[in-house]
Length: 340
Image 1 (cartoon, helix red, strand yellow):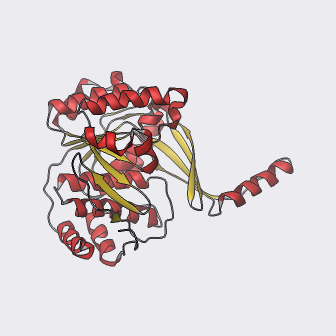
Image 2 (cartoon, helix red, strand yellow):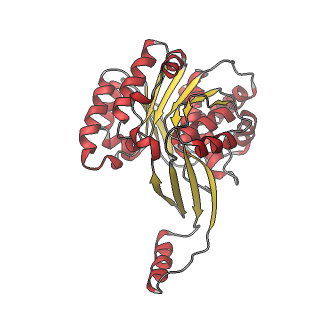
Image 3 (cartoon, rainbow, N blue to C red):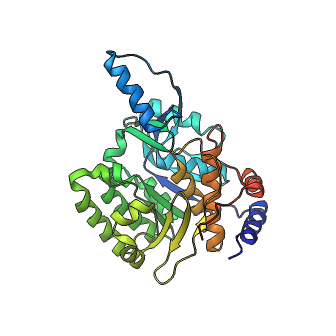
C-alpha cells in the first residue's frame, strides 16, 4: 500500500467542501476533568508521594487545569471542531451545565438534550510520563439507563446518521442503555457506534455483563465496535467479535479494521510527542465517525482517525483539530516506521 498516496488523497478530501446536514448523537458521559501534569515516571512520582507520607504530610506542587471531560463530551467536541453538527445526550447538575456551555462556546454542539437534574461527574487525571491514572467519580453516569432517554431523545436517535455510546464500563445500566438506544437507532437508518471502554469497573459482575454485551452484538445492534488491544481480548477476541460486528482496533503503534470476511492492513499512527493521553481514544472515534460519514476508503478512514488523535495529544492546549488545521498537520506529519 502506498501510504503517502493515501495521505495526499486524504488531504485533498479535507480541503474540499464537506456535505452538510450530518446528525451525530453521542452519549451519555460528561464530566469535569482535573488534569494533574506530573511529567515524571511512575516510580519517581510514587517515591515523592512516599516521602510526603513519611514526613507526616505536605505538598507536591504540580501544574493543574480544568478541562471538558467524559468520553461522549470529548467526542462531541472533536466532531464539532471537524464541522459535524453533534447532539450530546447526558445528565449533570446546574453547575455542570454551565461548564458545558463554557466548554462548548462557539462550537456546533446541541446541548438541549442534556438534563440538569443529575449529579456532576468529576475525574482527576494524573498524567505521568507514558501512562495516565484516572481517579473518577461517575456522578449521574453510573445510573444512566433507558429511563433517562426522553421521547424527544428517542426521536433524535431515530433520525440521526450516527449514534455513539461510550463509557459502558462506568455505567451500571450501560447494557440496558445500549440495547434500548441501539434498537431505536435501528428503527431509523442510524449507524450504531459502540465504545464500551475498560470493563474493569464492573468488578465481580464483569463477565456476566460482558456476556450480555455479546448478546447485543449477536443481535446485530452494533455496526462498529471501537476497542483497544486489551478490550478486544476481554470482549470475546477477534474471531468472535468479527463474526458479529465490525471491529475498529486502535493501538499506540497502529490501527486496523476487522470485517467478517476480511481485514485491512495495519495503518501506522503518526510520529508525535504526546503531551496528554486522556481523551485520545475519543478524538480517534470522532475521526473514524467523520470518515465513515464521508464514505472514505479504509486506509484513508483509519489515517484520518489517527490524525485527529495525534493532533489532539500533541497540541499544547489540548485543542481538537478543525478540518483546515488537520490538513495542515497532515502536510508535515510523518508515520511511524517498522509497523507494516
